[in-house]
Image (tube, rainbow, N blue to C red; front, side, top):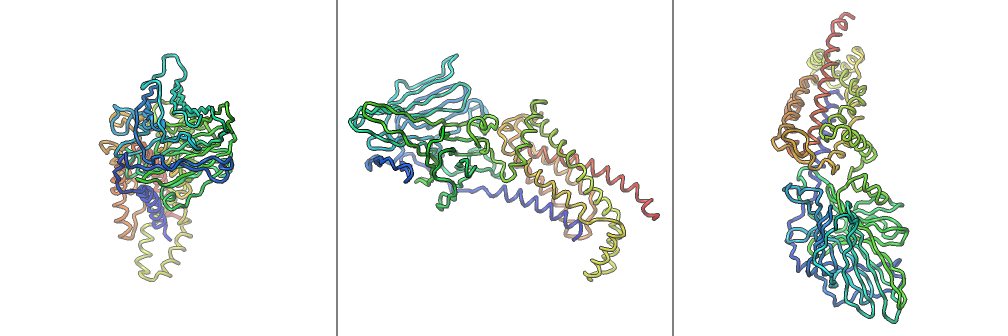
Amino acid sequence: MEIRQLLLFGIFSLSLFFLADAWQKEHRPAEVLQQAAQQIDTPTPGAQLSAGGHAAMPADVSSKVLSGEKIKVRTDFLVAEIDTVGGDLRRLELTQHRDSEDKNKNFVLMQQDANSTYIAQTGLIGEGLPSHKAVFAAAAKEYQLAAGADKLEVRLEAPETNGVKVAKVYTFHKGSYVIDVGYEIANHGAATIQPHSYFQLVRDGKPSAGDSKFVSTYAGPAVYTEAAKFRKVEFSDIDKGKTDYPKNADNGWIAMIQHYFVGAWLPQGQVQREFYTRRLDGGLYSAGVILPVAAIAPGQAGTVHVPLYAGPQDQDSLSKLAPGLELTVDYGWLTVIASPLFALLSWLYKLVQNWGVAIILLTVLIKLLFYPLSAASYRSMAKMRLVTPKLQKIKEQYGDDRQRLHQAMVEMYKTEKINPLGGCLPVVVQIPVFIALYWTLLASVELRHAPFVLWIQDLSTPDPYYILPILMGATMIWQSFLNPPPPDPIQAKVMKIMPVAFSVFFFFFPAGLVLYWLVNNLLSIAQQWQITRASEREKPAHGKR
């Protein structure tokens, strides 16, 4: 196979990766989620956790998501809205992050309206105990973190039933996206109770607002345990009942992931827990964990609490909260390469305080790292360029005799000391690193709304004036003139169309990704031009041998 064909194959393979990746995102039909018609089942512990002999939820409790009074909570990082029905967290704004479309507004991670649903629910399982359908009462309708205070507590109480008094307590922390959610259970009855608790995230299966239709990112549940490590749970797998994650463990967490942000229940300690995911009515999905509560004798009290992290996928913060939580930053199958790349990118940012400049410096460093491989590739291409006239004569001489043509080409390669694979293999070796860097730039929340220069004020969104994609297309055209001209007419046409196609395709890519490709192309052009020029200077001496 000729070097041109191999290079063309490599280009098409890389193009296929990006095209397949961009279009793999599932598009579900739009569903009008009427609040009164949404049905969310109360989870029931499996065999391992139900050994305590708890009672099931009463059958007459309404299965619809109802609304009660709203309780608003404000901290320096969060604006939360809690519903008295179930004490659900129905809305959550992140004050340190802007909305994807309107940067004058806060980013809303959780909400429930006619177009979307993403809420956090909890409850207790046992006869007469309050689930996410019970009605709670609070002392006030508004709470705000006081100046100088480190935390804010919001207490909701359910009516006493069968002598059991339950309070649901939210604890918000200053400068944190962690919300402690727990229950205080006082048994004033005559019998010992042994309840279970559940903590779940419920959302629809639609893509997150503001996500690009041309850049695919994962949205859905994920489960982590020490034994099985990180497991994504696709919505489509939940529909089919083909989920593959540990259902029971004494460690781990469960999360709902979307581009740049994550909500995760983080049970503490080595307590037996049961993870679950399920499809609900109205196009909704739930992902949660069930925990046992120690037996509570008459006159005694018990507690259970689980921290909820609901915020950006900041890897430094996530790694400190729970083992493996930083894996929610979705680098795909090349995490082992992407993670060090992000660490290097973050270090560069600390030096220059501009993510765009950091991307440029990272591209330069990667180019230097692979300089020997790239140089070998360009030398091989330069040699192929010099012998192109001889190759064309051989093709004209042997015409359609493929066997003799192949033999003549092999003899020419031996005579000229050219390895036809020399220009392709070095490129193939670098492809995993380039793909890993692609995911690094795509998945890092730090680049969200990060300005570069002049008209580029957000590296995570497409260039508003398409200047970077056009420049990138121009560099591809420039680079094509440095490559050996393909003798095959079809290949020649494809190589001419490729820069235009890539430019249009990159119109929809985040500016940070296009910036990387543009800088990489410019560096490649400089390197290839220098090597080609040096090879052409050697041509006279070569001809005398």
